[in-house]
Image (cartoon, rainbow, N blue to C red; front, top):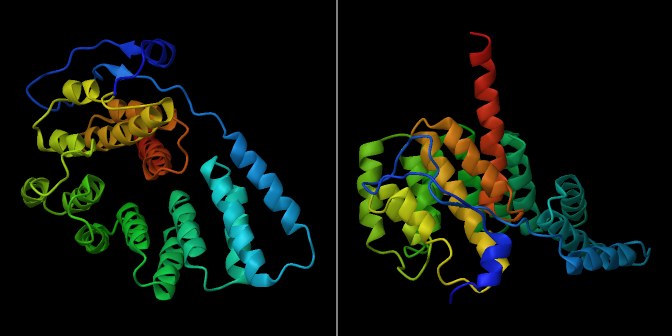
Length: 296
């Protein structure tokens, strides 16, 4: 389904630039970049937070139920980017109910975003001790290990996550990003082999094709609006695409271009997407790496 003309005019900006059709380029151009209309804070989320706060202020709630309410409110805070308030609620939740695996998982995510990796590993380990089948705790611990400079250990978690669904392109991309830090040539061949099992109806499969050099940056950007029904779907897709484009160009040494893509991912305001969370972290890491260069 195509976006309506009004939606396209009202929400998209096109910045024209040259882009090679021979495959991904690491130059300074950014193709036909689609600009997102930042998502607004959901009124339903605000009302849910107010209602949960009202309930939590009652003194007669059993602790297990209170823990669940703190967890739910934390998820709402997390979804609108209120990280400090989310962490407060997740911490209260696990104190009241130490068996709440999902709250440990969220705490691990937030500590990863703050680059407090030891704490992140501890929380993910706790989540997996409680629920050994918690698939996304493997993904999130893998991401923490990846950003913590332990790509070899991250790959083990990404592989466990990948084995649960060979058709998911996002699992393949994270697996590749860790693998390529150790053996780029072998990682590319593994990616090529994994591509054969991907779901072609999933738009993100095009991202894998881009990493393989089978579609160009310009071609990928031109595919961004295919099959969308509303603005939120567009924002979700832009957040994902711009993050993985940023990762590609960061690894290719095009730091300025990568930075612009990470900023474009953040502009979507899709706070609870993995890609939004770590676009911010990528920019933080870029700034940290640039500080020593300034003193040379």
